[in-house]
Image 1 (spheres, rainbow, N blue to C red):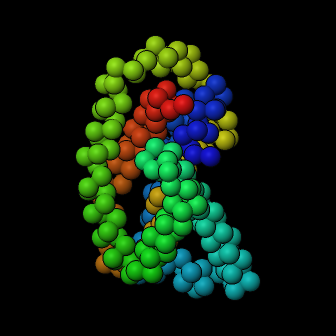
Image 2 (cartoon, rainbow, N blue to C red):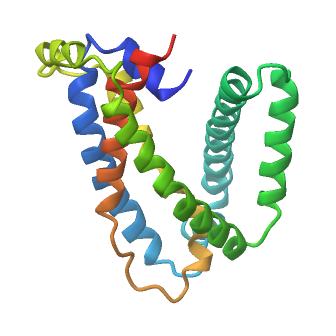
Length: 217
């Protein structure tokens, strides 16, 4: 189940407030995590754990973190496969799309860290205009019902459930990838413009919650 769908189901249980708290919590965790990783320049998480912890603790910790990362990535690929199958290629079986996504992800995993980072940067640059266009289009669409948006204001100050808060925080946890790509930042003293991540995350969460569920069946 996607983050958007979970947040939409929790809309009467504090999901509105979690949209604001999630990016803030994620920003705090991001600063703590990234600042900690930069103290181990040129090392990735397995090396850090191997040097900092006993073997009896480091190995189970890596297995736990690896399993969580695998499950998280698998959920993303499954959601993408269903989205593409539903809206872009209804004739293609979901499992075929999923196999293609897994093949592309596996190919990327075999590449050097800097190659993946450069590719990600290029994809991000190319997709930012499309993302901005989608956000603007969502709010200017004549089918957008702002009365329903205003009706949700009554639920703004309801304390969020753990589920909605976890979902909104999870949406801005991409910084965890630094645990692998930190070895490519051996000469970096500080990561700039980190403050933009929660701002972008909030705008995407806000738009996905208020606009797209209204259009989606």
